[in-house]
Length: 56
Ligand SMILES: [Cu+2]
Image: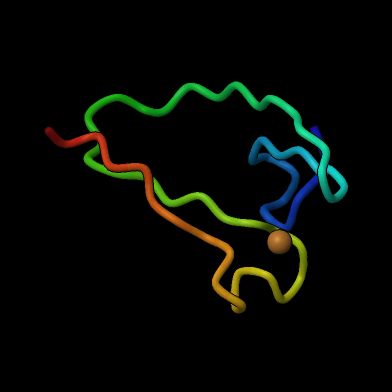
C-alpha cells in the first residue's frame, strides 16, 4: 500500500497506465455509502472520485 494524502492511514495502491492491482479493505458497518478517490495531487479536483452505495 502506498502512503497517500490521508496521513498514510487510508489504504491505497499506485499503478501505471494499463496495469491492474487489487486492494482489499473492509468498510465500516452501518454506513450507507463511501467515497473513493484518486489521491494523486490534483486528480480529485479533476473528478477522479466516486461513491460506493450500500443501500438497497
Ligand atoms: Cu488519478
